[in-house]
Image (cartoon, rainbow, N blue to C red; front, side, top):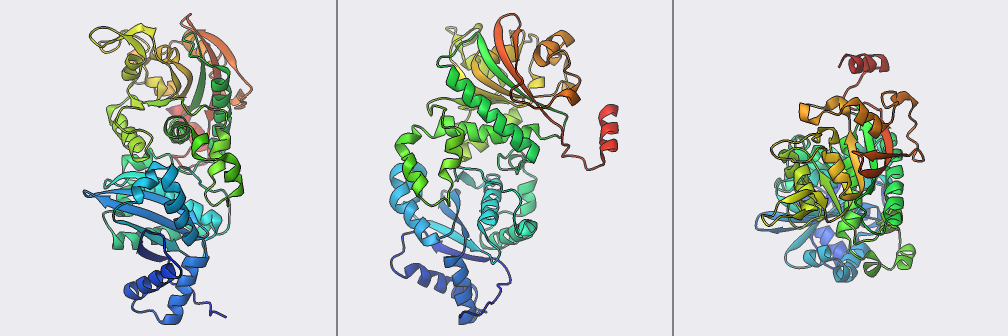
Length: 467
């Protein structure tokens, strides 16, 4: 029986990415460990190899071309079989794996004595969050988000992951920059891979149900009606984090994975092992046609750049501004055009199925030099089937963004200021006419958990009232 030698830190090997024959993978790991860790005796190497081959692992497949990386992150209970699956089967049905099957491709295999299914899923998710923020990476794929809830040993996750990242940074600082650089980046802060709170998860689930229902019931784009889902909350309650997560999940299903029924036989998926939970998000969006489209609208050019990088790196779009745009760009694109190529504001033409708006309270509510309409939210609604908007009227900055009390009551209801009476019930729905032209079904969800400040409830309430 093998002696239980506890490895001092996570075990990482860097190997060529290919289908290994017979005992070739075991031999390759053995040689890699001997070369990298000359201080180890044969018995310890056998134990480390056992963790890599027989225990859950996380793997990072990477290919470098012209100083830029293409990366895939995954986790598995059997690294040898997973490699065969990717290179023998997935290359035939997935263009990301076709690209990673050619040229000089390598992989890091990562093991730890405490790895179990939940912990490896959290490590995988954190890698996606970090690698998305790396400048030297062009594309990073995984096709799911999977932050876990409570599990053992959840309390060791941060220590284990930071240790892994430090080791990888020493091995390849271009692909794995210092952790502090990652956390300070704008892409990290807007990443769709942040772990959601219980409140955010509950609201997200209800929003996805509403999106499914709305798109299923409207076969054609109707410029006179729309569904509006408002994500309300004070500054620091996680509206943008939730919106980014929804953008990734909805956009990934609607815009990127085309005709999924042809790529995957759903019955076959159920029979496969559940290491990569293909059916989880498929079930969430099973009623949404894969040909539909989604866009995200932001109010600052800097944020356009951030979300463009996110959408391109995650392969949600091929070119900048396909899915990410300013409000005026969105309205212009989904309008009839003049001969000069300008959108006619009162003639919506094309329909976006799902439009997500960050900081919707900053949309113009009156005309200016760049916008000839009277209310941007109205114009977006008449060009979309579903609008999901992060909205907080207390954060309005300019006079041309101000909502009068009458319009706010139309949008949010007469008791909109009394948030304590609101229960985040997805059955609560108001029908209203916005600007006397658009029939809108309004659903409201209010985020209350403050995440930017750490204080007791009385202090938080005092700050809120003071501001």
